View 1 (cartoon, rainbow, N blue to C red):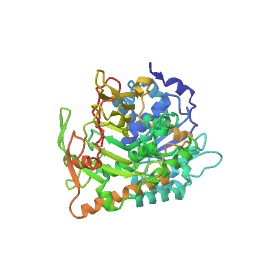
View 2 (cartoon, one colour; view 1 turned 120 degrees about the vertical axis):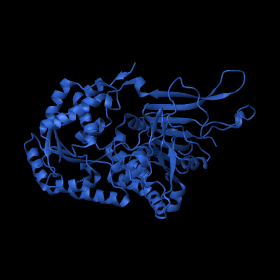
View 3 (tube, rainbow, N blue to C red; view 1 turned 60 degrees about the vertical axis):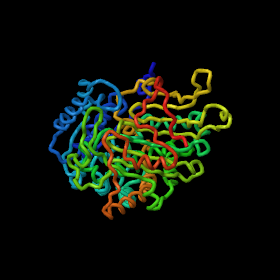
Length: 530
């Protein structure tokens, strides 16, 4: 019987009253994720009854028009069903109460006038708390921060707070990330900045820390003495969709690796923090990313591969290639798939390769961490029909089938000593009654309560970009010679051949994308054995 989360919500205190200003309120992020998340938090009584949510954008709306615009979208998508959780359609009675929180300010957030109106709005509030959420294009982050600082809107006094939330991307290379951090820190303190990565709002990601540090089973073996290598995969079946304007400038590397994939790497590789709090945890994450070996440009070239999806079949549906997608430059040199090998040069992980891959239009939607343990000693089986020992695997699946599974060896019934790989595992849906969520609820609640544990710090951001910079420079060098280095792969497959060659030359194989997990599946073949 799944455990209900309702009792937990009833024990969780509501956040303090505040006013949240959302810059870029007409954008897709706001209607698709932020407002549904706030709606869900309100449903669970986790935000103050007097909290106001104020959209700021150029579009011509009044309060009622803004509310109607959001309601139509959320009702069509059914806020709960649209999310990654499970639930029912929009609750009309709840929405009628929730929409009273919503207001709208029309204006240009590069114009000083809108900040004077924001200041007046805060002055009319019951307290001086304010959160400024930058749900805009990244090119406006510094501008908004500077304008907020110039208007005196980031000054904290009398026990009240002012916080700024910044969405990824946090720069497009090391230099731009350092410049963004410098601009933010010029007008506010680090503890006022909430750099948000929605991957860290997923329950399974947070469960990595609990699994490692709350269970004596794992931590003694969580090192280079027992682990052969680690694979981190973020596979998508969707194409570029409506994001061509952004994606064609970013590509798979900038869109996914310095943030999502490196956050997963940091969570699985950190040292035990001194305390389960923001400062200690974020310091350990920064140390891990800072310990990634700085490849030379040639080494980065040798330890990476890029791809771009071409026309193919997903299920029973034919889909176009990337260059045929609306809004994509016909001469684009943008990758939709990237794989890379990195080494973490610290005491725990020296000699253990981390293989990362992410791509669009792959065979299945699958975000997972696959930990391959070194095979057991072979000696006692030398006079049997067992020709070699298979590795044990721990699979931490982030989405879509959230949970953890462990592959181990068992004797097949019969008179001969024959082995098969079997699984035991834990699926969240089998143990917990998962609420309907977007993945942003935990992060927004933490921002409202001042908990920065799941938000990125400036040094972590810069260490991530420092690690990928050699890859970006290697690829730029290839483009400069007229050879993009981008290999095609058919939609519905698992990336270009170069990705498989990269890991196979080390005597290993990729864990299969979208492989069924959980009780009752057939034994899996031996994978990744030397």
